[in-house]
Image (cartoon, rainbow, N blue to C red; front, top):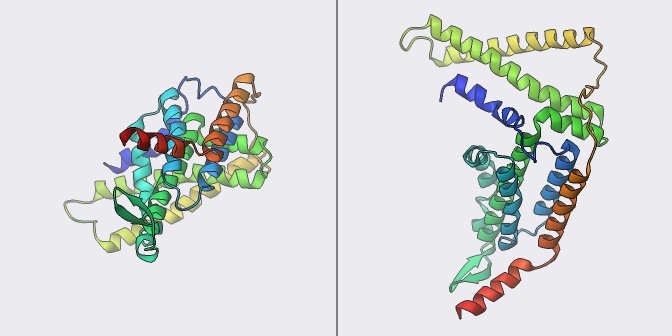
Length: 269
């Protein structure tokens, strides 16, 4: 994949947010609240819980299906950042060797269960966050946070962080194209050239960010970014939140997976 393709791949989440589906038409505040409740519920499970997390995959699967979001795209994004979760839990099997379960006569240590629990929680939370952006857009999520009462400074910082990511990528694209046009063969590919390019990229990004900031001040920016598109929470939004809360409460506070497992054991005996 070339640098240009990577650049346009970053903004694909926002492009997916312009689709015309029932999930996209929901109020951003309803989707933000539902996603927050989903994240809190998933994280609240104990470290040895693995089977109880399986039903929660229904939430991202339904969002991807109803929102017409490519499954392969979301899976690739989750896999791309999965090394962070793997690094966090990779040492658990060596530190927690006490057997806590027996599967098919094989004792399973608590370290392996906690490691698998970390991976599942990571996949659920990251996929839910990506789907929130893919069905709402990052600016839409920020404006929803602002209308929910989050501080204006916090929301503005999030918007600037996301916006200047593209500014940085655009400057990097210009520098790389300029280097490719002025180099021949293996020239211009050493470590010294790379370090110089990083310095030039930093200076250009800072200079362009200052120009953008002064342009915003000249247009009346006072620390808060207003939302030009105002929406109201309708009955469908309340229904979506109610169904999400019911789904989370049922699979969090009732041992449904344990009962299904017991029934399966009785059937296979």
